[in-house]
Structures are given as structure tokens and as C-alpha cells.
Image (cartoon, rainbow, N blue to C red; front, side):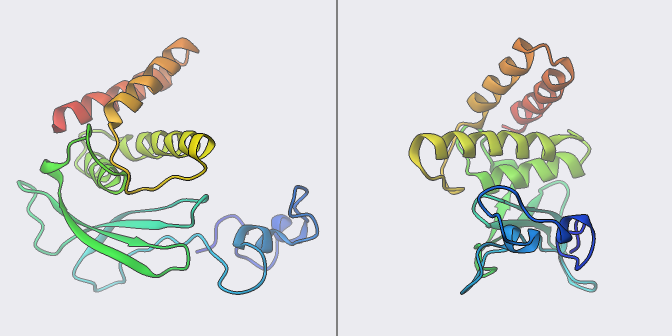
Length: 195
């Protein structure tokens, strides 16, 4: 996958040096980690043409290098939506593959992977067109908060996402960002209806 010259061999980003702590390295080296043994990369996975299952969403964390894909199985039933979640570590090793019943996800007690699957469902079903973007923002905020407080974060951590989202909604309102307020309020209402 080529994103704006990040993995290309030409272009402004590749030819110029990174000016922070990675000074002296090319942009590719800075993005992909220090040279040496297994360096982590950001990889988004998708199904190959002809696969029985269809990848609906793929997400990678720039902080951890982990990536996750949400797939729709061939025998998908919209009345009883069950997706497959695939999780890779920062070295692109598939570490977990599991099914998740969308109707059984409780946003007051869920990990990041299940919430991502629920958000993909919200977007693909048309129930909340900005669900994935809202979740990614919320998850990134939570990850940053936990890393600054505890030094680490695990996507397996069970969280009360409704409480986290209430804080984000209030923050958006307090700063006068009505577009953000309405977007996250809509996401909250979608999650509330999914319980």
C-alpha cells in the first residue's frame, strides 16, 4: 500500500530528512523504525479477490504497530450479524482470529477490537455513517491517555466506552465545536441503541 509517498522511492517525503529525534534517517526509516532485526511496519490487511470472506474495515495503530481487520463471512446474516476479527502484532504475525456477534457487544464493557467491529457494522449498515471515524478518534484519545498515565495500553482492556464518549461529547461542546459535538452525540446514540 502506498500512502502519499510513504512507501514510495521518490517524492518529497522520501527525499527529505525527518527533523526530530530521527534526524539523519530517511522518512522510510523513521516510519518503519530503526534499521536492524524485525522492524515494525503499519500494515492494513484486506481479503484477496475470490476469498469467501470480505474485509469490511482495517485499522492499524501507529503507536503499537498492531493491526486489526473486520471481515464479513460468506454466510453472513444481516438479521444476526456476526463478523470475524483478525488481529496482527507489530511484526505482521496473525495472533488472534475470532468471531463476534455484533448484537452481543456491550459498549459499557468491551475491548477495542469489539468496539471497532461494532463501529464498522454501524457504518456499513447505515445506522451511523461516521461510526468508524468516531471510534478511531475515541480509541486514540483513550490510548494516549493511558500511555501518559501508565506507560502502556492494551487493546484487550475492557473499557466503558460510553463514559469515555460522554467526556468527548462534553469536551466538544465546551470548546464550541458543534460539528464534533453532533457527530459524537450521534455515535453515542447509535451505541446506546446497540445495547
